[in-house]
Image (cartoon, rainbow, N blue to C red):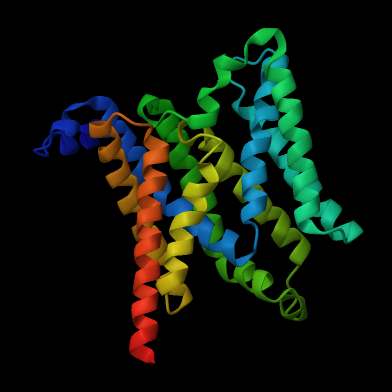
Length: 282
């Protein structure tokens, strides 16, 4: 950490002289590649709504943590999100119900329960930071948590990337090759839960899914193969994260939301590139 602070503070920019900005920049560098990698798989497996549901349902996890008297509700949040994710996948697979309907019902229930738990006694405002996040308040301990999560989850996703990709594209073909769609979906669900919940406090419930999806959606517009898809998504996520952080510093705006706006700008740019490529091909 000290080496990082010394390296960044040597840059000739005003914002690099603040320790909280250097720490926030490190958090972005750590998690942006993970968000991008996860986002490509979420889009290919048509689970964007699922990851959004996990983020919003985390309100209930926070509420349960408070109800249990935990000083840090993070682990209650992770546990509830894991249970909810498994229930959604299991309910859809074993009942054959429409996935969108199952997710919508689960999200409606969990959000309502979370608001009820957190609003008891009129104390909901104390937990509003979970809604919009606060990247600039991230601590050294949280940096190490993010680093551990990125290494473990990112490594697992890289090892199982082709398997998860194939199941998302053609589950029948994956089964014919001896792949277990059920267990792969469960492990991928757990990975989504870990990425979403471990980043909620600084990203915010309202925009965490956008940071997960937008870079990957932009990369999909211009990538020619799976390798390009991942690397372009990582590039968009990193550029958006750094540019959004710096822009929020000078504009005095919410960092997470500013990053999403920059990502949307990149997405629009990829649409233009896609259209130009189509005209040249015609």
